[in-house]
Every structure is written in C-alpha cells, then in structure tokens.
Amino acid sequence: MTREKRVLQRARISTKKFRQILKYFSLDIEATKIAQLTSLNRNTINKYLRLTRKRIAEECELESPFSGEIEVDESFFGARRTKGKRGRGASGKTIVFGLLKRKGKVYTKVIPNCSRATLQAVIRGKVDIESTIHSDGWRGYNGLVDLGYKKHYRVQHGNDEFANETSHINGIENFWGIAKMRLAKFRGLSKSTFYLHLKECEFRFNHRDKNLYNLLLKIIKKRPLN
Image (cartoon, rainbow, N blue to C red; front, top):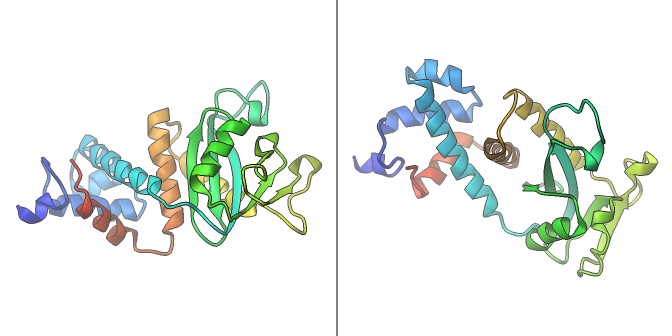
C-alpha cells in the first residue's frame, strides 16, 4: 500500500495497472488501444490520462524564465476556416502564443488576443531581459526595446521574407506544425481539453530525447495523482 500511495491517492486501480497506462501513454498509444491492452474501461483510461495531462501542464508552467536566443510567435488552432478574415483576425480560433529557446525548450500560452499588452505581458514574465528576441513584423511586438530588451530582430513575413541575415523564427514555426499535426488526430477539442493537449505537445517536444515513462513516473511520485 505504501508504494501505491506514492503514485496514486484514492485510486480504484493498482499501481501496476497505472504503470501500464503510463507506459502506453508515454509511447503515444491512443486511449482506445490502451483500454484494450489493459482490459480497463475507456472511462477509467480517460480519467487517468486527464490527470496525467494535468500534472504535465503544471510541470510546464513551472519552467524558469527563458534566456539566450528566443523566438516568439502566435498561432491559431481550430477548425479550418471557411469564410471571413484570415490570420490574426480570424474568428472561432484559439490563439496560442509561443516562446522557443533555440536548441532548447518551448513554452506555450493560450491568449485572448494578439495585442501588444497581451504579448508583452507573457514575454516579460518568461524571457530574461538580457535575451535576444526574434519575431515577425507584427505591431504587437513594437516597444520591446523600451521594455529593456535591447536586442530585438524581426523577419518581415508580410514582405514574403522568411529569413534574413539577422533573424528567423523557423524553430517556433516548426513546433506549430508538429503541434497542429498531433492535435488534428483528436478531431476537435473543447477549450479546457485543448489546453491540456497543447501542454502535452509542449512537454513531449521539450523532452523528446528523454525516456518519457521514467520522467513522468518521477513527476507523479513527487506529486501523486488523486
């Protein structure tokens, strides 16, 4: 019982069963298949996957401020546009802001809009003042130098420029592609569920060279699921 409490609290399944679930989750096996492999009810699987994703999201939010060469960008997630405005003004989309340290980790945040105040608030909270920031030409990034970020370089996507001698944001754009491809397989997510799946994308990307099962087990032992 002592070992079970280190991983699960008030659980109706054994630690052995949960470790099976976690192993298959780490291997990115879908919930329906995990239910078959573990002989557990799909609702039970969904419950423990949701709790695991919540721990993952909490872990992602604890990331220390980023420093060094930082790429920033926003992206729009949701159903394919049929009518109306494109890009930053598109309706019905979930807006996500991202920071990526080159050759390092990514951080994502769901935001209400792409205004200067919104974007700069995230940057101030997550990017060390001595960092070099790379962005596109969106006006929401105006004024970063006035905030103390003395090195801010831009690539002008509006002029069909995707890289120049001083800047590019290819790294964060690559992450957007990976995340969208992954999330598309779920065929629609509610806003609350979207956040957890987005953070899972972030976590998998940030720890892509690690043993995810061992890492998740360590995290959950530190803060058992309940």
